[in-house]
Image 1 (tube, rainbow, N blue to C red):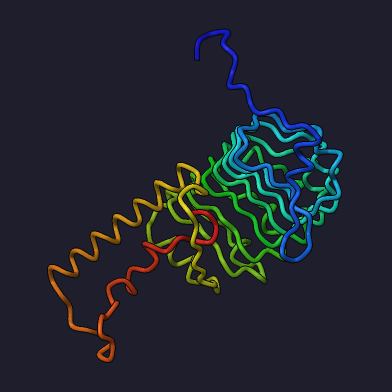
Image 2: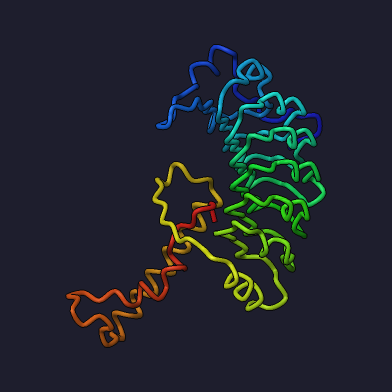
Length: 261
């Protein structure tokens, strides 16, 4: 960008526009959905809508989340993924009703995560994937209600034992980190009781990075299928007309993961 040039002008969100973006979820909660709207600055007008239960500001161009985010005291679900956020405000720790927090695919570093995260005692899911974390925040070890943690695609060299000892942890994603030994991540993952989920999404709903990763995984699967065609293997399931043993063995390579891999 040329010196003195202004950045991209984002869409202006008025209170009227925001009110029209409130939806009712299947379980009767109010969700304010401002995703994919080209927003560059956190819209202050939505601070007048703090009675919503869910807030989606994902896939925008937002760089900073204000301290006033804590006014959303009823918020149980906060999605900020795919923005340009490099730091979360300390006041996020006051949002004790939060059950779900997604800040993946941003510019967060370990220093950009406040220690106040340890006050989110009810949080169930935290996705910190696709950022610039070089260590896991020790605050995560204090969140005893965590069920799912996403740490994939960062700069991690290890994951502390305090994470593996979380009593209710069922899913931990640490893929594509520069661990010293490839097997160290696998050994760590084996100590976690995991739930395998299949999520189907449309391409238009994926950010560019996630879409490329899914396409790469699909290409890898096609390559495996072509190899299987060239050198057919003996069917493992003799009662099946079209055995799917090769796909079954490689399902972790093509499965679209639960926390936006």
